[in-house]
Length: 384
Image (spheres, rainbow, N blue to C red):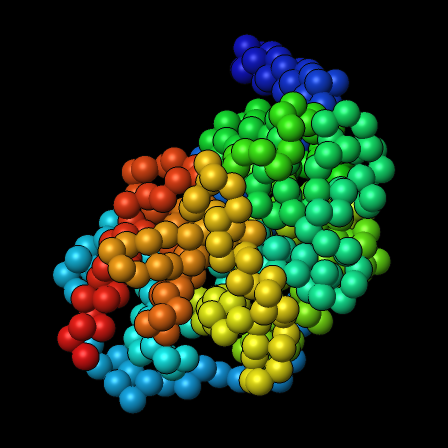
């Protein structure tokens, strides 16, 4: 018994020393990581982790449900789609044809109104908010220096960085996009309670605007620029610019770093559902128009859906670009396989949300599951 008490005492002492070391080395964000992710049985962020963080509510306006297609849910999943849905833990799969719900199904206890983490699909919204800020005159152009809004970036290579560089992933910073390393800046940004401090600690190591490098940090800095330019919190700007005007059916949540600092995790973490996410794809498909009103400048939309950098033909301003055969898709993409995929010429939108994108965990590249979700959707549509 005495031995057990002594052992327990040493465990408490060692645990206390560990906590002290984490604070001394400025890695105390790992405490939140352990509490919210690792002790929940996960090795990375997961679909419903937003419940473990501070969030700001984004209210919806007048709901406008998607109409159902005349052939609504007339066809079931193909064998290929059913197989990948089961293997990768799909929770929502929706096909929208001619702006009507052609097919929808939900899995694993989720339904059409269930919220789940957008992850990096949020980047497309932030780029859209850049377009809105340009449209409203808060930002002069894509070539305006970031240092006009973040003065600490007014020296050396950083002074050459533009807002367009941030939206097109070409900042030249030393951001390291690693999701499974507890010591990466990506992990720190996800759990740190002072995100602005983390971002302003980045170094610009390459000339901005010259090369594509997928970086969540670029979107986070862009969000800080937009807040400075507009004088509005990004979650409020999203509410008034898109969430309400697009007649979303449900309010949503956007994670913030903490109640104290109240900065959105702009590169990720909007908690919503498949059909409300799809609205943003429709807005870009229709060149910024919604119900006959120009919500977003059509020129900016067109520019966003074209490659910006020669070494990044798969990326525009906040949107991924992919060609399969004669079809040209643009898409919102997020960690673990969150997708809003649009083929404007066919007037088709495919939404897939789920727990995994399969065994391939590459970042900044197209994984094979995307092609499967597209091909199986078209296989189903071809039966119609």
